[in-house]
Length: 128
Image (tube, rainbow, N blue to C red; front, side, top):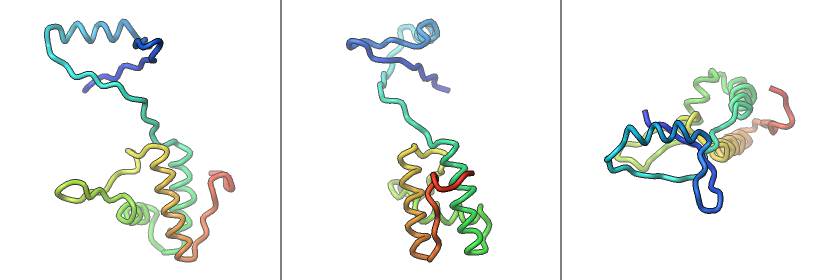
């Protein structure tokens, strides 16, 4: 397990949310060479996005096709979440998508569904 320490940049310096925890962790690494990575926080897909995917998108496609929502999930991942950058192609999980990637994924599904004659309402048009 690699801990992640949250911080903000103020006047070119890192100000940690938990400076004591960060310092204790650094003491465990005394005299060792380390990598330091600074990046903007990742925004994972949201619970509302997940509820919309399962409760609206997959349910409507399930009704239309006769497949279960789980089968629809696997099929949509095969269509739109293939990772061909490795030697062996894999499928990405929706749990690892950012909010923007999830939005794009759902848009691709809605476009595909429209081509099949299935209209999927926007998230703000339904309550899940």
